[in-house]
Length: 449
Image (tube, rainbow, N blue to C red; front, side):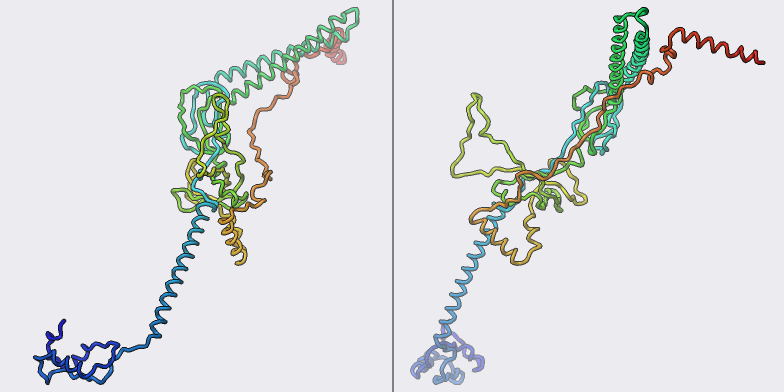
């Protein structure tokens, strides 16, 4: 704003703040006169008194200004170095997290499924389960019409009694021929009767096994669950025909859940058998806790498959791009949070916490050494531990068995038909004397009276 437009009706106290304090020498008398000449219309009584001899305030030396500029430059340098260090650390952490840290989003819940097939054929007359029902081992799932198998069992038992009776008769005949003299029989007859007894024994053994088979077939008309689990995808109905050897019902083994984590081969150096694992399912917050159980020792190699002419089939690859293979790692589940149902096929983010859990109990020096090792792994590559994945597993596989029918022990024919032919071992003369004695006993009793 020009000075000639300033109103001069202000008091000296109000006009004092308008004087600019600049770092310049005190004005001379000629400068003061020039200022008064530029205000011709102002009343001399109302002009602001100006002390031309008083120096203006705010003059400072040059030393503090140089110190301030040095401080600003130093602060900029330190901030730049700090930002650089933070960026480098962030890059290392991100590299460690996405390249070398043992975790993967490629995890899947797995389970064993018992595919149940009937061992006998027939029409289904009763279904005792519904879809997704929990069943115990040994529970009846459905029943096949047992009429034909009951008839076969009864017929086999009747034939067994017939053959057992025939065996007893032939044994007695053979034994009687052995006690006769050469005048009553010949050696050839004795051999024939002994051979007939042996054949009768074989017939009894075969009939006995047929009865056992018929009894097992009758029991197999009730199809039972071999495991504890859930009936899944039940499509059968009453009236369907069950074909022997054809799967018609499946039961998920509730005691066989595990998790497969497919880790990149660049992360396998940090995978150790027995390490603690956390698997977070996609739809739940709390993770499932487990342990590394085994590491798969082989995956499919596409280059190993021969072509139609038997020649090796090699897939072309880019030399500057190397895709890491994924190795399945089996994880045994030890703890499932409440409210999380295990469903085979669910996706999980698998993180191995084994190294962190081992370091948590150590001292500060051990943690710092672990951090240095991690940084060294990023720069020079990971160094595997020799005890992480043993060459030979110390864990013995659990043997799972089902109760199966055992062969029936041979039965004595006399137990099948007791008392079939009493006195067959006695000669006819001895039998007549025994009968005479039995008849003479009452007479002696009458004579004594």
